[in-house]
Image (cartoon, rainbow, N blue to C red; front, side):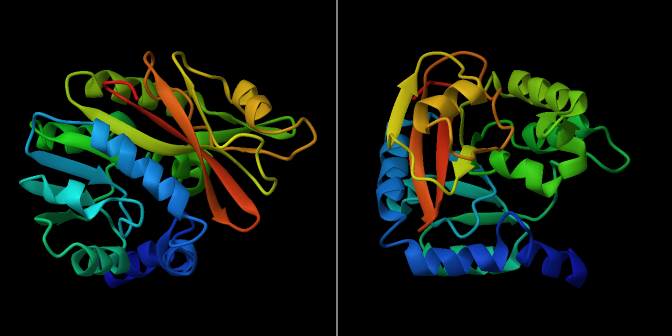
Length: 252
């Protein structure tokens, strides 16, 4: 990774230094309830493999150290150099291997799907955890993921085709994703909820917020075509609330 790429990763809009600062400020207070829920979800997600790939862990602010230490190797796909430094400092007993490639870019000489497949085929025996990653794609690659539809954003056909292909590729391995579905400056009416079916964003918003609340759709529906999924609220800042979806190969 070039110095320019490292600088860009450290200050990217989906995380980076600003996010680490928020974590240091709020992780023991506002973030604590959601972090406890993540630990419970991961504790139930027991895998037969000794290897784990974590996509977008940042500094692991929501990840439990004892759980990570249970793997023989943890591959962290994380371009942010500050995050990698913090991961080593915060989890010294974890057997880390770092990968700084961008397997999720829609740009370049490879097709979008082929680019992501490089990660999956290169780690055939590993479980995969997407750590609050898919909900950031609309910020990382806005032109490829979203298009204007009236006054709202809608997912592009290319993004949905890539997503469907990756869901099919994940079918033969244990995987779990925790990702932003919705966010708002307004406090939601619920703190958690579960469903046995996929939930459209409009229905999910109506369940968590009143009709007059402004809600942001992260365009991260569609992960996991069937099975149980759970939703938890993460209060990221005093006036910013996220509904996080947990879905994967074994249901939640």
